[in-house]
Image (cartoon, rainbow, N blue to C red; front, side, top):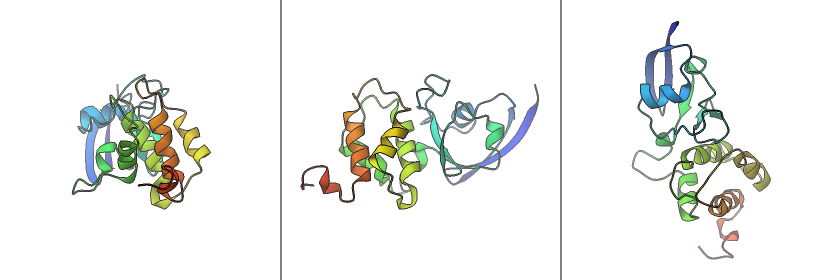
Length: 165
């Protein structure tokens, strides 16, 4: 099997490595770079637990090879919060709306929402829920996740709670 040298920026830090051509980005992120917030569920791109942001787009890291991400900028769930620990808006909203339970699917869902709302973008609720339809969650019943999506797309977060904060 051929080995390839790769270099990428992950959560603002430069990472290099030598990988076999068949190594997935998910495996490199977890095993090669230590970002264990990237969860592997189905390893077929169905569950969405492995979603990360690559060059501004949400992608299933189990379906992308590490060599395909050479020279890319990648954000994992570990890179969303501010250096002082302040949660990213999506993380805070998921917490506020009780959109998580066991936490296995949470990183992928958060990364999808973060990609769609990056830079102050305001997707419609239908767009956000459509993107989230590719994620499987076995614990929450999706209601908290839906509330978080509604809140992220509302022009005023008080709209979701009937005017109270």
